[in-house]
Length: 214
Image 1 (cartoon, rainbow, N blue to C red):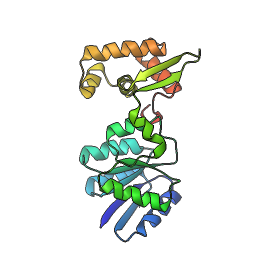
Image 2 (image 1 turned 90 degrees about the vertical axis):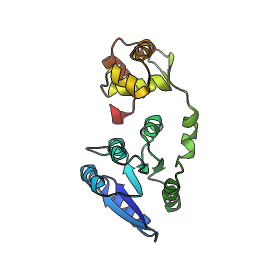
Image 3 (image 1 turned 60 degrees about the vertical axis):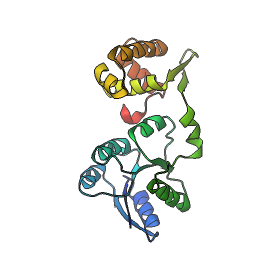
């Protein structure tokens, strides 16, 4: 029996997804509408696959995934969303999700995604495949000039938005504090800002920072 937990603050969507998956004989499905309640449930129960909505009040899908993986590093988490996740893709992969599926997917696609996750295969929509090869995130400033952040610079900017210190960023990214400072200097220059707070604001304005971490 495959145990599945769905967490989605949209009750109609969640119940519909539960009903759809429950039609599969091998699946046993639970659904919770409140991420706070889910937070307590996953401390007590282990599921084979977790399906988390990306945008929820309280703990969002990313925060819930972070918490779950701190308890069970082998947990299989699929992010279930009706929003474009291209700007969040690298961050979601970094924290350890098993895949992504659109709320507009068919029953067949959703069931296939479950089995793929169980088999240890990544579930990635075709339109996001090119993200796997992306080395830089390029955007345009208001003056029309283009600016590109490398994956390392983007990772540092995300941690700046989380209020991580330079030492904490260095530890997480396995680099020296001086190297972090060099990257920050480059980021400030590229974004035409003078401080961490300004970099965070500009990063959000340009779509370089996922809203879920700001």
